[in-house]
Image (cartoon, rainbow, N blue to C red):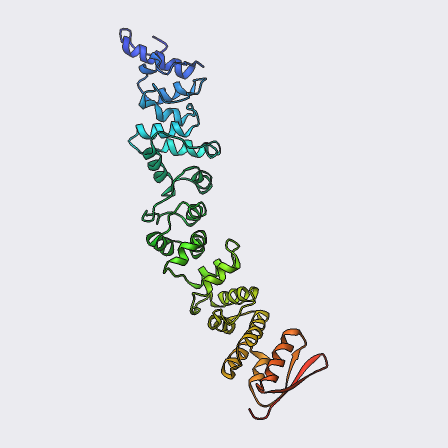
Length: 365
């Protein structure tokens, strides 16, 4: 009694203080879930200290006083099982507390490999929404644990507060139903790259819809290896023109590259190809595309003039009836000059001289 500093006769206080003194100062441990010593502890601090001194880990929450659950999770004295988390979540009126979240974060590498089999799907679905429809979990933990859940977000779920990296994880794991609402959600609230992922993962649904995207999104799609060249061409066949924005040239390069890969024909969207030729930044893609257009379409002076003008520089002289022009000797220039000569498009002759093609022009066309 003198040790605890209480007046004699205060039996109840002495009893409490004595137990609390033992908990704090003696390395003791009790193994019974319902220990009478525990029930005597009045303050949460002492209850936590008591549980921390336990040698055992409790396998499940059966028979555990609900007021202790948070302490068990906080002190890692409960087995790392989704079933225990869901049981506690159920006892907690379907609310995720900080001790749940912190426990999940600490043990995510164990939980990620567990198959979720729980007898109440509604509880699991509610936990899924509370854990993954927001940014409460760190991005790395989010990415590890999301695939464990056998659910997807509905088309009309509001995920607008998610960070783009988390939404990328959702989409990459096919956890968002494709539809008008979900497409509008991703298009409005997330990056063009994220929208391209959503389209790539739901390509058939996108093609069957009336949804559209901008140049940057289309660039990501055409530059991706998630779909084959035939699917990319199917997409391009539906596009009528290239928007005038900062990604127009990059999109044009991708268009030319894709169509050249399949050796396009007159049945393809050559209006889009000609549009792309005019905006393309790569000389090789541009001149190869011009030569291919010349192979498959009947000569048109206005079209040829427009395409040649897009090459710029010395090539502008090929649209005139005077002067002289010189070009590097290569197969692309040879093919173009041969076509222009055979169709009398200002060129009368070209010859190899001084490691250049020297061009002479018709004086009237």
